[in-house]
Image 1: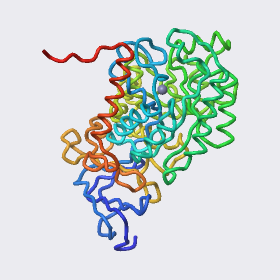
Image 2 (image 1 turned 135 degrees about the horizontal axis):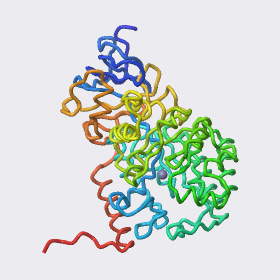
Image 3 (image 1 turned 90 degrees about the vertical axis):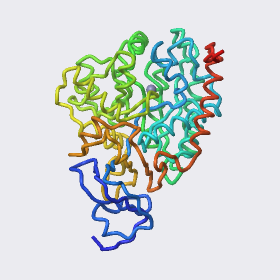
Image 4 (image 1 turned 180 degrees about the horizontal axis):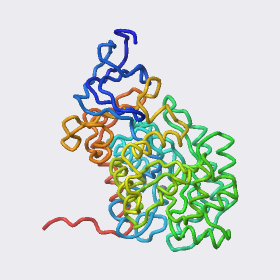
Length: 447
Ligand SMILES: [Zn+2]
């Protein structure tokens, strides 16, 4: 290494979790948007120094499945039923204006950033608003529209009524998003195609999404075997299981990120695994509704596991810990360990999004997407091997500073690109309005 090489940013006095291989004590040098080296501080002449204070520096999380505007129902839907589109008496996604979706997405992206996520997948109605929010918060983001041709307004009543023109319109909107946003913000924003689920998309619409994604070389993302209702609806419509429908259309493979994958029997697990599907595992949301994906069996069958928080608490530390806990409750024993699950939350997510080796690891040449944890956090001591304490005892609240693409976007817990209080205030105002519309009385004022 050249002595006193110039760099833009030097993170000193760190325990560096490289994401692959053992942790190292030393400094991380950043030049532009990339990591230039890991080594002794004396090797570099930085423009700016940042001390990790002896604490942990780790790769930013890759959170592979979210719908930030749905945060509107968080804290309420968990005790009532399933995802909003399938549940009565709560604010519905189609009520949202683009501006309302923007303010909710800002809140969601802020929360994810605050919890150490540097790459997120976010798709819902008003994808343009989601992309604007990602640009404003400085995240690396994969954005899509929620494509479906079932009438979601009727879904909450238990009716699957298809409207082909509506599906085509939503697909067009997602393709327009690709044209406008893919590669924007110095390449931080990417477009995805996200047909909602096998029950809410017709066979023709799923096939069209697959064709368009392939033509553009962009990721395909869907929900799969998320609920028994979905499985039953597809069986009665197509005479096959949801994953069989995707397989029939040539969509079941390593180019597909499939969220949830809960309701699969052993034969079905083998087929999804053998196809090399990228599973977006959402242990917090699964457990909240009393289900859990057979994640160890899927892994052993060949699926690649990634982690997500899917509109629940955006704390990927909680997601990692719960992934281990529920797998062990299902008999996994110590066949699942901290090091592996940290890889699900970082490297595997990156690989699923075509960013293998680029993000999710700390190594020379990779993107500088880094998280500095609080060296004074009592929950993060003792540091012995690094990964164990992060997974088994970390939390989003121990995230101190976040760097995306070499840029500090959160410093000492404060976002650098936007006004945190304003984001929270605007999102609350949107939520107040929508819950009023759903007929929910506001919290009473004490007399
Ligand atoms: Zn979802």
